[in-house]
Image 1 (cartoon, rainbow, N blue to C red):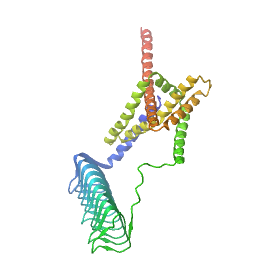
Image 2: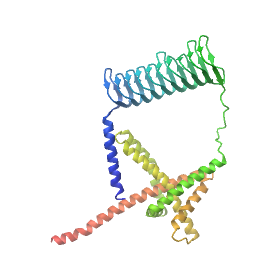
Image 3: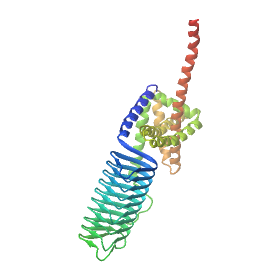
Length: 400
């Protein structure tokens, strides 16, 4: 334990320094209004967040943004990857556009492909897409020029666009207006026929596909696949537990002692740790330079959850062996673990109750791990303090 903490500290420091070097090569902007002013040139990748993000000037790299409102009316020489409530692109994007929001409007010039997800997706009449378009939303409107294929899905799909190749649409209502052009085939999936206005041009074939019948909401899983998934999960935890027993048997003794002597403290520690660590990880991610530490905290959280059930299983098996007064010998720890894990998985097969039992096992085991580690650190600190108190009089006598 004494060696692990300095190693992790050095690792986090190295990652932070590396991330700091990367951060200097990009432009980071945040606040209530993060913007690239008109006439301004950003000669790197732009990371922007805030209530409003506006790109009125030129970005000579990619744009990554998250905000309530995003407006891009300038020039982006790379890709645009953004998420916001309202997204409006009327400028020039020389790369690809990948956006998601409640209301998405693209009415600019995109040299690459455009992918848009939202409740409302509107490709305006001034829109020019050099390659493909993928538009998914409740209401999808296509207009302007699309260089290659278009794939759309929504409750309502309306196209007035000039599509140079194929159009594939899925929706409750699909309409091609009088100015719509499809240079290739038109394939649509809908219960009613698509509305194709007089004057709409379709060069290739038109194919109407009916939606597949809605299946039952209950997922049907074959007994064989379910049994295999349970066996795979059991085998994974079995291997993990055996490895931990071989590598750190003392840790099992510490967690077992905590679970038997302080079950309430273990449960509370597990509950707090399961909730607190993800929050701490998110806080690290928000600070940007703390992202490496955030990943380490998240990894620590996942590992503790995985090992939690292992420690609970070993304690459960120990209780069973003690009650039955089995004399197993040198392999007692392994037998207790395998027995406890088997019982947990058998109980876990019981509907509803099994899931609750497995959840409690994870919480208790995770809490026991954290409680044992903290208790061990406090004990080590107390021993050091006691050692200093014992040696102090001896030193003073020598001086005297």
